[in-house]
Length: 318
Image 1 (cartoon, rainbow, N blue to C red):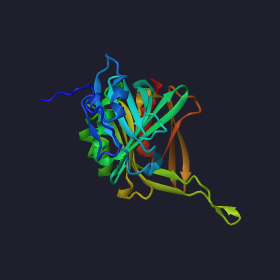
Image 2: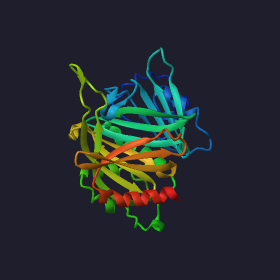
Image 3: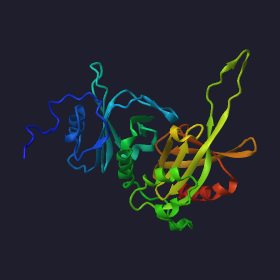
Image 4: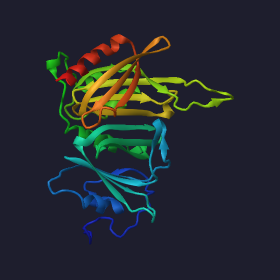
């Protein structure tokens, strides 16, 4: 058996960042290019590696749902304490960098795909600001990022239980109730070991046109669009799977993952959209200011959200 002459498996080999696909390794020292030294050099001896992967530069710098990123390759390591993310633009003008995100600072994840393009986004709190880091990649490697999310969720506390009067279900026993089977497939892959579902319901996500284009001497009225969505509440997280505008399969599915233990308050504001009720969920986090929030506009019938309101508000009031 030939042994490596150095600590790093790919030392001395220059990476272009254009490798064919996302792949997973057992240890950061096996990563390609600058990522090996960046991540391995910052690991603590007390940390246990949960997941380590490499994502080459994607074919695009933007994806559906307004996700954008730099033309860069990424290394990602999930330990039992935090995320370590390295970024290399493969240009002389920029030095490779590394980002450290403790589990306690994570506010949300986004993960999804459209055709052969996938995205992983992590929002976190740092120095009084909310920062969002996006990684675009070939969707063939999406299962690696799904495992990274599950590895983190294992360390989140369960916040909902039988004391709230709701019987928990294993994900497999509840997901078959989802009306959108594609959403169910995306949601199931994000369930961590031992996570219990409280309820699931289908609804619609409200998209609002932000730009008001001028038409001759007056502004055009802003338009609203609806796409399919599925909401799942577990004992650890709130998940929302949504289609992009038009709902076409090639436009993709995105899943928002919110940790319940980091939520300070949730407010529900009811509005009218033509003849339908719109519930705008305003999610406030413990480490964010009162002005900072995530808004989730949903369109659904009142009876389909009353149980959700009862359960989630019971958690917040504890």
